[in-house]
Length: 319
Length: 319
Image 1 (cartoon, chains in turn brown, purple):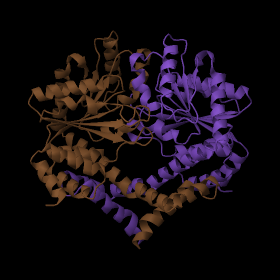
Image 2: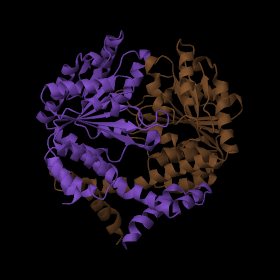
Image 3: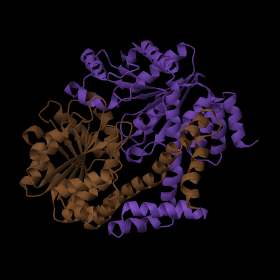
Image 4: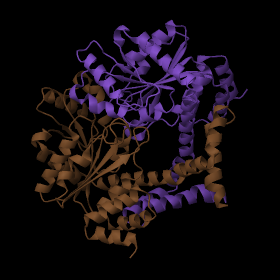
């Protein structure tokens, strides 16, 4: 049997080793990846996909651990995907999740995978959407996608989620209003973690006041206080996430979210088939170095050069 | 005379109205934009391009104001580009710079422009690199590109800068190590602003210790303390920025930075000529809606669909 058929068979049978294998094959761009993904798209079930974001230091990892506990207590399975920007300063792991969650791997209802992004400037792993699809094919009840809140990863990943949980911690003082401005748009549920700290109630109030500024809510995002290290507030948080998913279904907005995630996956693939392909070809045959030199000498300009490269590498090769 | 020739003539004569006009034409995707940009690339001088990033609330705007003052005292001209994510919560402006800097517009040596990005999820204005080029053509001694530190804008914009200044404020408590992890990679000069606050010295020490972890520095990023509201430390900060640019020149690394900015501009244009073009065409003829439906029904998958769309909209149309 072909490798990709073995892997798909393993996914059907909910074998964790098959899922691990599938993710590795897809992440490494193996020749088996297209076949596996084609089948995985057909197998996709009805996982609840929850994006979890928030700045480092807010206790996101502890909260995810605690959420996993509550999900398991309620008898559901959960897959966790952590997108982990590699950094020369931390030796490749900011989240450190590989270590943190290793203790849970004896539980068959939990599967954890950390995806390396390509550094702070390199951007998100192009394969995140596909890995989510593999997790869906495996059939988890919940899929938690956790990102460290720096750079562009959180923005891109949130496009794949049905519900977005934004995690904050109190104590940011006067800056809270400014800091929240960008993040308010993407959250469906907000969590003020470390809520045993002094400023928690004030921050919850500020956050609720800011959320109230938007009059057009169909769903007014709730703000939940948690102390994840003690498990406090976490069942209530999961309730709110479930409520949001229920709301999406009832209001026919789930379809819109799913469509958004397909568009994100399509864009990632379009980019790979065009921009990435062109740059890779132009790099390997020396055209790119020459072109960048011409740009710096003012002999051409980016818009003209882009048109020319599209012609050379995408269109002419098919003549 | 054609409009684009008038504009270019105005740029040559350092007329501020011409620069304002050029930016508007480029930002709006006018038919005149390609001609203007082609000429602007030839006019480009030797501006020092400084990217300035940091979370909202660290006092970035005040610091930029203060830097402008020091640059002007030293007899240099400065153009400021603020990339400003529009938000439904703040009515379109987080930075609020348009108002803040209006008072300076009687000074001919300062020009300010705020560029709207397309919201937190929509990403950076695709035209940022081109607007920088217009500023370079105008011939400013310094170009400051300021971004609010949320989302992907800071990452993308920093690719256009010769020097990157990362602004922080003390008082983030125990979280400083985690928070800095992502940002350490992109800074050439660090600034701890609001340095009259209690935790400033400790945060400077932590930051310097973390920066010392990287043994491979050719340039060890300095950490400068400022109190921007009082102008304290700001001349020293500008000195450090100048030193970094001098270092780049002496070590022949400036060319590498310039090349990085050309690559960023090329990528933005490639994306416009491929992904954006395909999605726009597929959206307007109804193909996209149909395709997203087929994806959700499992009848195709993103990789296959992407290949098909590239063929339909980029390759076949040239047959």
